[in-house]
Image (tube, rainbow, N blue to C red):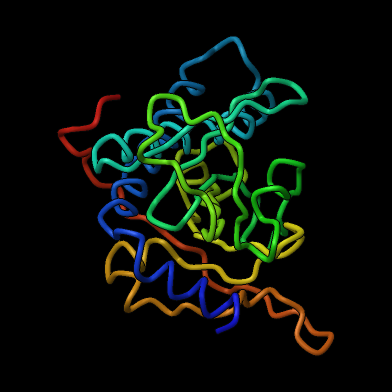
Length: 233
């Protein structure tokens, strides 16, 4: 069995679609609330509001992921980077290690860093890592034999308008060992509705094939729903 086949099998078997649905709904609300917070700030020009929106989108995903982990009993951990002490969220769903990454467009390639490359090493099959497991050592004890997946998210447009800064793209991506390209990506809106077993798990359509690059033509859209009663703003 190839690493790609194993990645497909692990994603389809280990990730709970209800967890993904919770993340999708809550992240859509996080984007909305961030826009409203910036819109209400009369001290900033529009250009700076757009800059702050781009800078704070990662925190939106972290908030949505942590709340969904707490709701569904999914273990997570914050890993401090040695270079600057910055805290990075790592979620453990069965054999899937999940991190988040904001994106500007669906065809965007991975933005590599040392800690991402470490996680994606050995062709996305993760070797044993020495992590600070915090207060969950019994739940995140064995990180060997897992695969890395990345929650990719982005706004629907580029202008400072409600419809442009709504959550417009939500994908689950598996990188290669060097974190230089996506091996496969899934539309999480479709997964949340139909489950991973019925999703089209195929190689990333933006990969180079025989010298040609196939571009995405569809942007994932999420309908705005009421926040689940169990979530806190």
